[in-house]
Image (cartoon, rainbow, N blue to C red; front, side, top):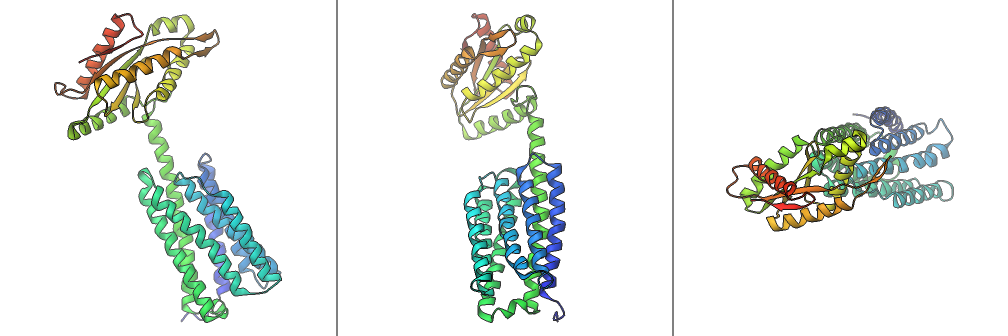
Length: 385
């Protein structure tokens, strides 16, 4: 039997658990200051901890503080935690709606404390607000999880659904068995609070895991990007080429490569300096990514040379894309200390062919087409074989 357990003590214990959880998430926020969900989780959990501690101190502090103020911390705190999860799923949180629901729920709870005292109604309102937040967050987790964090979001969704079911069951128990049931020390009551405590501990671990996974994704992204131009680097290009080459061969769709080179770049560096040359490289990459299509992949091949992969694109269509790219770069202006500067590029294009043994050979053919473009006077596009 668990008859010796006081539910108010359990609430106080939960508040202490939430406080420990808040300290952990505050540390995570300090480590990952540029990750907004970490801030939401830290502040939200801290608010919940204050609310839980105030609720657990009922009888030792004024009743309005342990009831109204406790809910004024708990409801927005839970909303903020859920919004952090939603933001981690790369979906815009419904801040305005959440704040409106939090404010209305707190106001109704205050009404049922001061004007029309009704413990059961307060519990129903609190549960409705929390379940609404959790169910929406669970739906976002199930529908918007991306990348390597899919499994983590799925687990979070299941936890939120389980907690919602537990909250609804508890509220139904209060309505059918009476308000006294929540003040009892029954095993069912203790089990409910243990579930809530376990949820707090597990979700803390998952939030920390989400932050770690996000940090790892950023590190992986940095390892695949050229630090100067922000284009994909040679390592990433190899991976993309291998993948797209295999897919193109397996599904028999066209694949084309562009090899672009800045014209007279050595002379450009000699005339304006390497600092301006770096500005030019970065500007070329930015303009190229805007001119290319979303499905195209832009990579820095080395020096002033760039390669673009064009999936589902035949040779003539790739030539048209390359011409659009060339024109965009010709119109581009580089703001340098010496004043506005323009440059041009030459581009070689090749479509994947059965005669190419692998993507390296296709890139070599694109390089030969680039050489022909330079031999033809530069600032032009040549389609190779």
